[in-house]
Image (tube, rainbow, N blue to C red; front, side, top):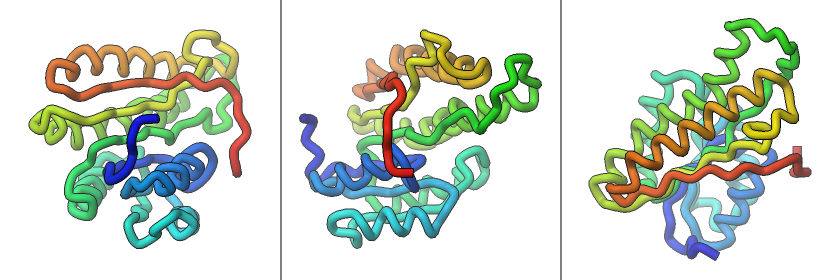
Length: 190
């Protein structure tokens, strides 16, 4: 497994599900974490359940609010010193299942599933590029290629997959690895 001891990792969507599972696992392996999601209470619950809870910070933030991210990312960097890895877990279909989805609802899905990650990467990647190392990991979905979910979710995750491939091509020469994982359905707490 990739060594996590001493790695400084930012996890979005860390308040429940896959994000919370990753937070606990990474903490157990010796990583220092900044956990981000909307619910401060749920984030604190995850943070305090992690090994060495004092080594981790919970930041409640609406990931779709670019101005809020402009404030939150410097706070994360100040706490960790630098960010080695970003694990973009936040995402979802928001319960929007209408096949003839409205433009407004489609934009909500893109904002959460693609634009939030893009904004965080914009704020974090320059320091990684300067150091010549870093990992930007995006949780996509098999829905991006198999169209097994709603039209809006499938489309947003396909957009994320294209973003990951495109950004990866640009940042690889700077030593920054941009990856995406495409899980299918899974069970996780919450």
